[in-house]
Image (tube, rainbow, N blue to C red; front, side, top):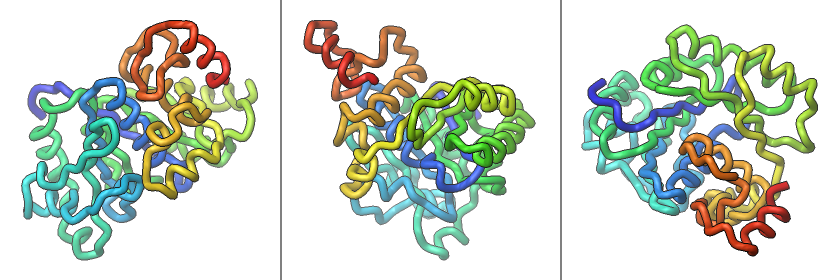
Length: 267
């Protein structure tokens, strides 16, 4: 690729059902809320889901772009806080026409327009995950707090390492309670990665999904939203305590109200 301007992150998981797409879409939205120029690309060409998390009518998609039928900017939509979304399509015909090898050209065309490009990938060991991984600057692995999920995610981490792509860390999603130190140790020992985010099970996520809105936008002070915004803050290099991020995802003035808010909602 040409001059690298955007930080390109791939969100991957070892198996389906981890909530990877929800995590990646909400982290992207949170970054946009912090004033960053953000694009999320759904590179799961067979089982597209990113577009379902946003309430807009999709008629042109990444499938059309990868088939060479349209310019990439024709398939980019705008979501909350100005986050840009490049969704994949839902038709078998579109899937058959799409050439994932064209993704490098797409990234080259858009690289200078964004601070962050986040790619949501197919789950598991899928041929279509290899190219997004190779084109990434960093990989974030999303897993659930189960031994089987940890084991499956290790395979994804191994593939990323084989292409010398830095592993940014692990996000453990759908936590019913705090992670035990034993599970933390297992994650680190098996994957060699640190946990950069712990997202609790939260009814606010289901409510937001039913509304086709990111939880960080519709329920910004929910437990899940604060966890997701902390992950985004790390990626953005925000050094002050991300627990005090306000409802837009930006850094508020550190007044009395914000400190109290942090105490009650950052748990």
